[in-house]
Length: 437
Image (cartoon, rainbow, N blue to C red; front, side, top):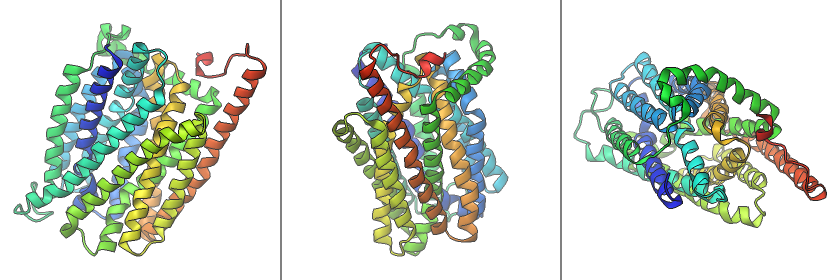
């Protein structure tokens, strides 16, 4: 597949393009939807429909990637993502937006875990002794830098096209131009992955997509069975669900909340882009901080994740209580700093537990847990935000994050007992998913 450096260059480039395209409309997306006549509850329903689509397809599409090839499924995902953006651009009603979000959900389910699994397997094939956490932390840094650059550019684009018709009156408006530029980035991403990602043909791929689809039910059943039999995986799925709920709540409602604090939305597009870009830069700092902290704590990744998860919940609670824009922005950024910090320890823990030939499927199981939490955050807390306040929704989400750090502490305790057992009886094999196959 190539050297470690060449694999990293290709993966990081694909990541950068994917998240740049995702981020361009991100800072103003809810405001664009609202400008076309939808309220906060309908926004929550759209996010919930997106998450539900991902939940229903997450594991089957992960199995498909394991069966027919991660590159082929990734290309299909990015193509559908481009189509969903086109539908979204022409949407002016709830049903039209719903179609666009469902297509986006299908695309996200297909992409989830596909290239990520290719990257881990390619690294381990190039260097069987490679330490995954630094490589995954660098991937997280690339992701967050791309998100930061994308949101900053997304905030600038409406100003460059300020002469277009007012929001809600035409297809091409200052805000909707961010969707147009996102589509152009998606096209470049398709070209890059098609030309640069090298993957050996998988056994099922020789039989085509039909044979690959026929293997999906068995792969999905096996993945759920492996998850159920591994206590560490179950605990990680719980932390992922809590994080998904909190993140969906923050992402769905920060724009209208900051519009309240700043006294407007359309005139502050660049400010919104700068706020979101800053949050991703803080996420980069969290990613970078996770590496020395992991070394300091002697690679106790569950403990590192617990510290970041708890701090994230605390800062979200404090954010919910703010009435001024400056402290709210700082706390918003600190939420993302700790979100960035927890990512690579979580990814390292999950990848340590799963077999290579089932990596896409198992990463999709984890992603499914995140989207299950996202549905609850989008719909139930969306209802709470609409009927009570956004602050009330954030208080609930922050409290859930604080409770979820206990799951990481359980993982750390389990690993500590296993390490002690291995010291006293070095011939005792470790228990993980590889035993359960």
